[in-house]
Length: 437
Image (cartoon, rainbow, N blue to C red; front, side, top):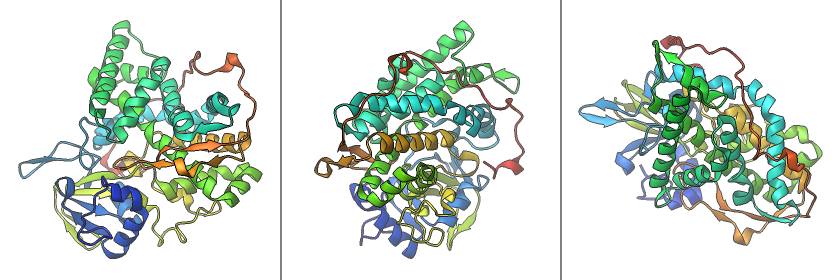
């Protein structure tokens, strides 16, 4: 399969894909919606909405596990190519994945996130306070790279003073920066050390980490290495895609003053616009699955062991589902059907939190720096987007304003204990429930 360019195989790791992914995907949806690429060990790229949706909702045919054996080959994983270490329950299959999901999900539910929003709003305003008096800011370095790691470290109860260390390693990893593997391994080692410390003293920080420490599966505590892996999964999931989407949103509002004005005049439209912007930019580049039973996708016959790359950004711009798909329309009735957060048993467990972060950022930026303007000569996009699609440098200028967060409410000295909104249920689910989020 070639991407829209003669003789060039599709490769979501290439600089050309980072520059022209909407155009490449549009050509593939028309000419080769399920096409084979020899890159990264060989895989099929799936680009139409209905096909992507089916794969995400059919784990009995399309698996996420990373150690699947077919004809003497070990294949699998939720990325193409597979990452150096397992991504927690994202790379498990039902029923095991759902056991851990049921433990974690209550701490990231819609109700739990609503209760956290006042704290979230304070964190957003505190971050903006750091630059508001100067009239200039780098949206990526001064906002996007700060908010998601601060929030997820706060929610997990990890050492808040370490947020920059975690964020730096995870941002490097998402961009495949040289040396990033070593940094990621270092963070994972730190998670194991923290879990061992919590276990030794008989308790972890209030919230999901202690829930994992105290939980039993099949009558036994969860292994410390797996607890650390799950905490690391939550840490990584809460950082880089949201950072990227903050930059995508600010860039779009700068380029579309009519939409910016509408959201300034009607803040109630921000949530629906946020869904539309998630659909249009899809900060997570894609997902991967492995075929575990003979099947057909589109008109392509697939065999067990075949690898699939799901073009999330392509599915979200499929004109057969989203007419005039290149336009952000806050009134679009089906905007919520985007698959930027995935679907089914592996839908992003932090989706409500990520969406809330984006909504609060847009509201705060438009309220406190409504006349912001990007210095487009200094704007820098990620050179490659194998995992995350966004910008690396985005300088803006705006009319200076006052700080609004009193010193005693600054987020760094304090801690938030997040409680779940329903009791834990560790009973293994029936296979019949596998299609439901």
